[in-house]
View 1 (cartoon, rainbow, N blue to C red):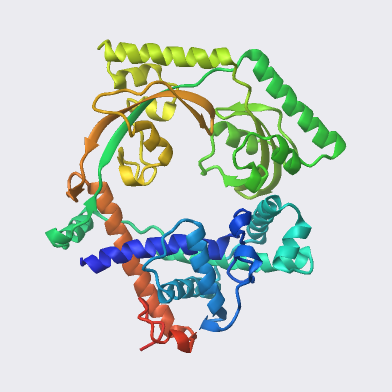
View 2: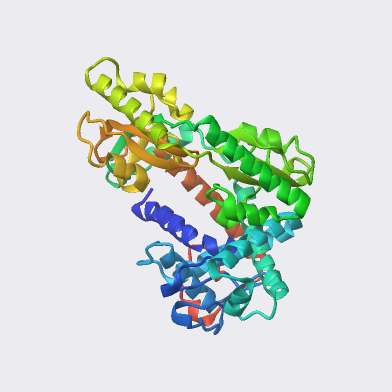
Length: 475
């Protein structure tokens, strides 16, 4: 596999990330560079200047791509911090055309996105935008829309097309796997001097102590949830507004406590048990999970899927409880340094984090579930905790505000791997991931070639000189 092909994988990933917002979200930033963007709505940009909608760049099936859509794509990438150096208008147009072809073919293949799914997504976006801008009137004025229904209809169409595009691509790649033999053949086909280089990597372990709330603090949280429940049931208060005002769920700003899920989705057991045992339209009694205490209202049951809204309240943690957790970690750290037991043994016996405890506290990389983290791609929070650790050094107790509340931890780098050229046995998981992406790229390209032949496509004169990855010009 050539260097060009390896680079193409990277470009495709960068452009895809940058354009994702074109199909399925509206994004806002704060005042100095305020902008909101979508794939079809004319949008304000920096200092209230407007993007000029000035020409048709392409037509794919029934979909039109405007030149302004290309400009907005670059703005989206830049505001997300994605480098645009080296990415051309031709590449961006090519990606937009791919998205439209997916959506066009999804309609031909009768791929369905339910009205309920679209409505949920649209409402979440509107709630987020209203919260960011201040009011619905300001939002409508910002978009130069006559009324809320017009704006909602416009956003509904954009959201529907985005979801169709995503589902078409998922259908093409569904159940695609790659065998170890395919990985070996793929890797051996790359000349040794062109094989990927992986940066410095580390394996990290941690011991976590979670301060426990007092009984009084727990009872206070439960009583608060009961008060909210009573106000909703007896006085008609809005649970969405209550969630926005009082919930400790980090996602409340975007979704006002709303989630749609099935029993297979990765929600904690307690949450799913209550959701699937509460009748539609009713609010549960307060219940506990690892994140705190909740009440939950089942808004709709759709077969195996439940639409629910919840409010989370974390019991207050006292200063004494925090000091106790830190003191326990100090003691554990001293005993490890004195050789009474290893860091891994201490994690297995003393850590409160069940996800890592049985692996001796070793963290898993969420990208590929391996134990290695490449330093340049590491979560900034973890990186800041380990960057100054040398050799066998163990950190002092560190406080962290996690999704499940305040915790204290000890952190240690247990292995370091210097930058190196890919090695089949040592880097198998990373190589497997690259090989699978290349196989997916080949599958998508083959699908694109077939559908382009059968679909009406027109490219504007300004873009006929582009060297597209796909045969959009039908040469």
